[in-house]
Length: 99
Image 1 (cartoon, helix red, strand yellow):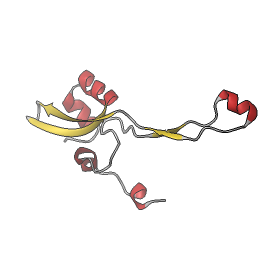
Image 2 (cartoon, rainbow, N blue to C red):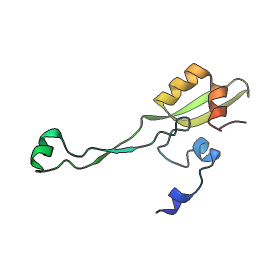
Image 3 (tube, rainbow, N blue to C red):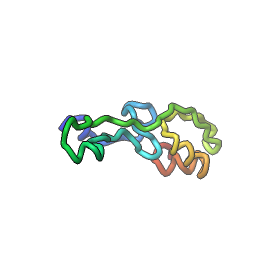
Image 4 (cartoon, one colour):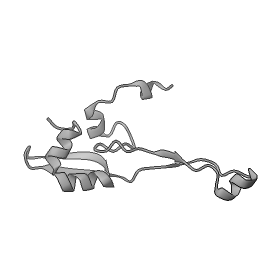
């Protein structure tokens, strides 16, 4: 196993973007998908290779009125909806990005 997978993730990694392609709010990352289609399952001929699907991540500046600060985070679109629904401060606090 690679050393960077064994390393404990720190909250500042998600703020500064050191760990690429991971949502700071929902921890969404990539998934390996694919395999056999239903027609291939019947014959086991010419299988489809596995591919990697990435989360829809955006780098966004989020203003937190309680702190009077703007924070730049890498967040998925579902994370943006969570921020819109629950508020910036409570969402970022629950994710461990602010104190």
